[in-house]
Length: 157
Image 1 (cartoon, rainbow, N blue to C red):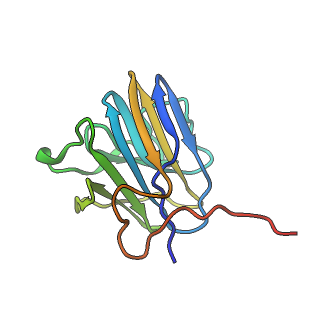
Image 2: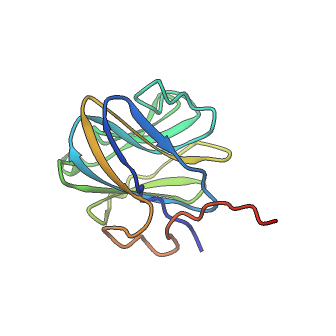
Image 3: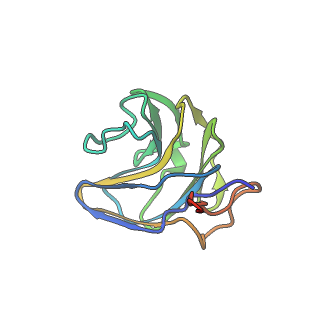
C-alpha cells in the first residue's frame, strides 16, 4: 500500500520548514490558516532548507503559494488561475516516486509535475507570517486510492 503525507505539524511565523523521511508513496495535506509565502512538496536530503522558495534546484519539487510547481528553477506546471489556494483551503499532494499531484479541498487539480530523482522527503516551508496546519494522518479529505498515511521507517533488532 502507498503512504500519504498530510503533515501533522504546524508551520508558522517566518522561515520555518520541516521534513520527515518517507518509506513508500506519500500524500500530504495542509490547511492554509494565514496566507503568506509557503510551499509544499518533496525534497532530497541535500536541499538547502534556508533558501526559500524551494524548487530552485534539482533537490526539491514543490508547489508554491502562487500555485506554480517548481523543480530545478523551472515551472513544471501551474494550478488553474481560478483554483489558487485561499485562506482556509486544504491543499493535498501525492507523490508516487515519479509524479507530484496536487489536490485542492479534496479535488484533483490535474497538474502533475515530475523530475526529482532519488530518495525524497516531504517538505513544507513558510515565510512572511504564513501559518499552515499539516496532517500526516487523520486527513481532512480521503487520500486517493493507493495512498495512505506516512509509514515511518523503523529499525527492528
